Image 1 (cartoon, one colour):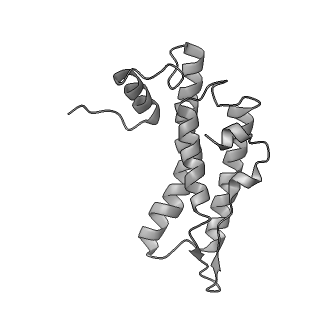
Image 2 (tube, rainbow, N blue to C red):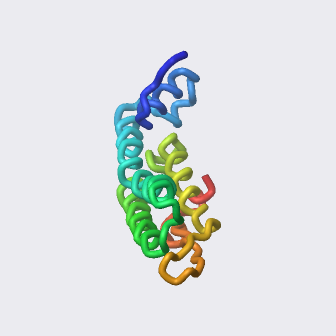
Length: 152
């Protein structure tokens, strides 16, 4: 039984090497590999941590209630800001995070976006007035996302 690190970048590199993945998933070229590693290290602390820990793990477990609308609105505002950073810092005018070809960074980004947009389907209980509110679909907030990026 082989053990691997829980760091996303280490897991991606391990799996790419172990299974001889095509180079575009985890590029051997140093500048592209650095960009992949940069994104994979940025994503958990800037996107996943806040959204998933606050709204899907810690809050419901600690309070034994659903996330209040105010907190969900705050988290979605942070998610929107993170999506803006994803667009402006990583994607820029490229079709994919590393460049012209899909990589593991794009898969991680899409998985995060899918998790956040799933929130639209999951209604949250508003603790102050007892009404149910739908989460926002933050992918609609970023008009610069191209058809290719959205269809990954």
